[in-house]
Length: 115
Image (cartoon, rainbow, N blue to C red; front, side, top):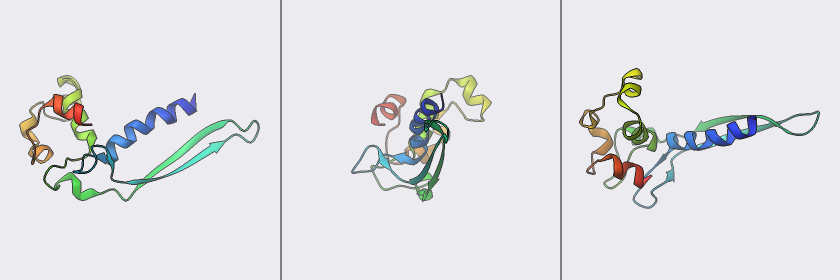
């Protein structure tokens, strides 16, 4: 149902806006406006509108020492198989993305454990 779909999507949305900082391994770097919709007939949940805002865009290309970019980048590189990466135009070679690990030694186990 719609309620389950909205709740499941929140984790994906957070991966686009959360990042590791020196103070918090899962720090929210954005805000979001959520508008929940309910049926006039029975008052049950009918849908939702989620609008993220104030994304910390600079984090994509630069960070303080010990911090990382948004989780979604690490999820995609560590979690997708080679065929899926090819379909969306990503390289399977992590060395093609030096901005993602400019301050850390990268390996996929660390990426997934730290998130």
